[in-house]
Length: 368
Ligand code: SF4
Image (cartoon, rainbow, N blue to C red; front, side, top):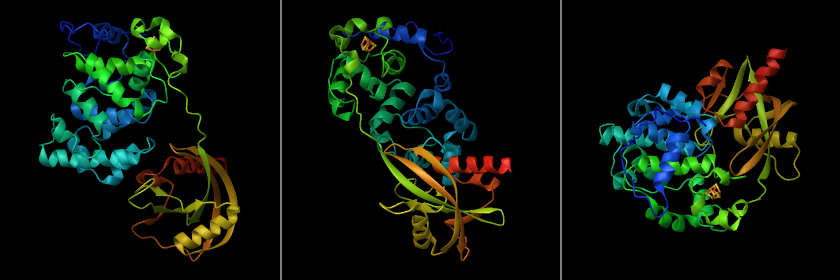
């Protein structure tokens, strides 16, 4: 791994060495930190956005989303002035849409009440939408260099192994982990220390096959001593349940019918094709008929199978059975129902499954 010379690091700062060795850890980080776009900024707004994005997916996946976001919304004022639809559309593909709604709501509050500056007081920060313990701690420690311990998935796994804490990697372990972190967190270079812990978890103390032989904290690691590092944390082999869903593609005059989901619940405020869950024992065609009647009060006159699309979400897997549908009467547009051309889809934020369907429809069209 290459070192990252552009990181802003105070080389003169002395940090307490025992009991864990933050000094070793920080010097390891200085040499091995990945060169990531949000590590070149001290702007609390950009650090906040990157930390929210990183909670839900890998660093590699986040980079293009982060770069696009900062291009569309270079400042917190740009977010606060944007419509919810634009904010959701820019986030599309990252999932967890409540998080981006919270970013939007917090940006508005920060601009209204705090002159567009993210508060550096944890009491105030924690009252803003979406600022839970992790986001608050990450912003305060990385952007404002405050002595705040944080726990993300990488740190949780790393500390569980260091202390040989058995069990699943979930929030039940966090009290113990936090106590440990509060003891070892240095008084200086807190920003580097917290990022070093996360980076060490991501690059060395990886979920599978940790690289113990090159680990800078190996001599402190109880799991390594006991040779149980591959057993910690215990793996959750729970099967993600599969949900079968029918999707109706209704076309009229080259336009596609889409509808907006309610403002609360799964995929709130996103747009999608009509359809719904196939009930137990129900055939896809019968489910289509039922759903179209229930949702749009229209009668399905004819349908033909188009494709299946599989999509993995956090709590379930969805198999989308997609049909071209002819209905009577033609549904009318209103605030939450629209006829949209292919080019028009770019204005509407949609769940990943719908985006996949559009891509496949586009492929099918280009093959004709
Ligand atoms: Fe993780 Fe191995 Fe390092 Fe322990 S020695 S912290 S298990 S990489």
